[in-house]
Length: 126
Image (tube, rainbow, N blue to C red):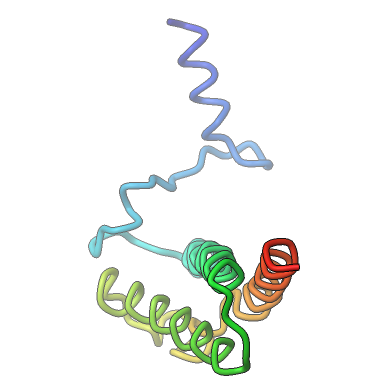
């Protein structure tokens, strides 16, 4: 039991030795306090998950054409907007405005989406 507690404590430590205050329950809690880095990280990783899921679906179906790139960008952006505006209900001006929040992780997720889409499409249909 003592070993389990030390493992749990070690998992909560950050690289600089401070104990992390982030809890997964705060992801859906509108009353949770967010700093700019935490919110940016969460938005970034949500976009990455959406990119992988869409890339897998688009490649497996198979979908082709620029319209599906636009659909991915609209879907990804609307999920991010819905998350921070409707679920978390944060004041976007405290975090740099809508532009900064909506662009968080956009280019990395777009690249990941294209990579997964092209790989799955090529492997499954050629």
